[in-house]
Image (cartoon, rainbow, N blue to C red):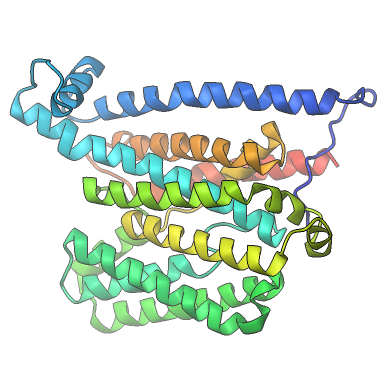
Length: 359
């Protein structure tokens, strides 16, 4: 297994005592400040992108009017585009991106596996099976689809719990159980599509499986806000325990951490949070894998700093990826999961190469 200790800096000579720590702290301050500035600006600008041209001023007017502030309202059509279509989608992208990045960072620490991501526990495959079952049955409205995806992901995680059994506290056994359950639910999904699917339902299924935020709503955004917020709060409270896990379970126990209880609690937290996020967005890959690595390279591995930074930059990453997915090939839209994979593979390769040369 590979621990998440910060890579050694390379250079002509060793750093003076305390220099690396000060560098990490200054990097964290810079990254956090930049993220808190860029995120709201990105949200505002992303709402203006689309076939119907809108200015940032019009976006603020629409939001202010709905908040009851004394401003002149936009015409009904423009107001509906901002408030009912684009703003929920932009906020959902930010919430899903931030939540997946936080869950990815936590799972990488718990399993001491740099390739761990939020879909490690079979959640994505279970959600796909639930969504496919709903779509094939012809109940393709947003609420049943979300409900089916969430139910499928929870069932998949319960299968992981049952398969891992008493070994749930073993990182290797958790990973193996997740792989087995993922393969099982992927096979069930394929069977449903082949057995009962037609051309239209298969197309809808494929689009959802690749990750899409096209069906975003205020209800979905609120659900994801609760899921991501609770996960961030619980995981941030367990940050000292996550730091201890970097040295192994035995070392964590010697530092006063209960490895079994901590691991089970955080696995359940990340699984349920990821289930809610995937139910609203589909399977969007690479966000929970590459964002923690990229942020960790700047701020280090202390989870008190790492987790909030992952939330901010995961939100920015997926927000801009979704904006590009709906604007680059307009009027045609591509699933955002396709774009995150195209971006994520070279970025992940660069991060891994940088880590290997820094050893």
